[in-house]
Length: 212
Image (tube, rainbow, N blue to C red; front, side, top):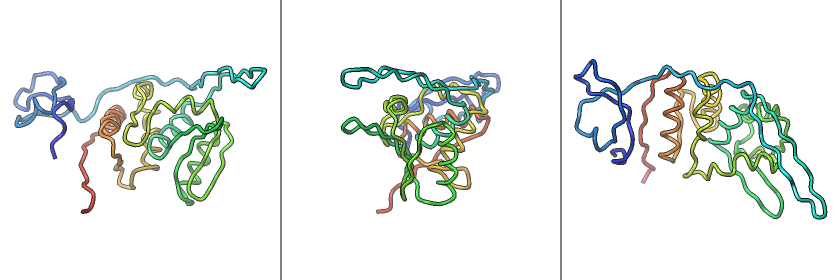
């Protein structure tokens, strides 16, 4: 199946060695001989911490002030990789819940260790890890559900070091031992392609059709 006509690609003419790479749509590229840039010399932001903003939390007749929370950038990068691959968030009757779906085993133990370093209380069930936190919920609720998920722009601005941590966490959640990543979202596929290129690696994607 071809990419959507509006899908943007970073290419240059194959027979023009001195031409510069530029953005072209799949419709413009179709039928032409082009080169795809396999990696980029990306630097990005390498801040040591990520700050989750504080807020005022109404408690009936009084208001509780929730302070800013600083989290090591490496721990946040790992958490976001897990959340983008296997996470969900929901609100119900005053309860803010973030869940990372994962069955018991080695992967889940690593996820638990990584997520616990952020300082939130993590509950473990047979099929998931769960955090109840309005502050964390506010930081991820706009990312969307499975088919709508996109990598936030601030993550795409990270350094290759942090992006590699994010990539490895996503692979652990929804990938394989060969380094392949899986998603049903074309938008998320494009974002992950950008992550991989900024890590300094080459990438390609393949459509897998469901059986039947």
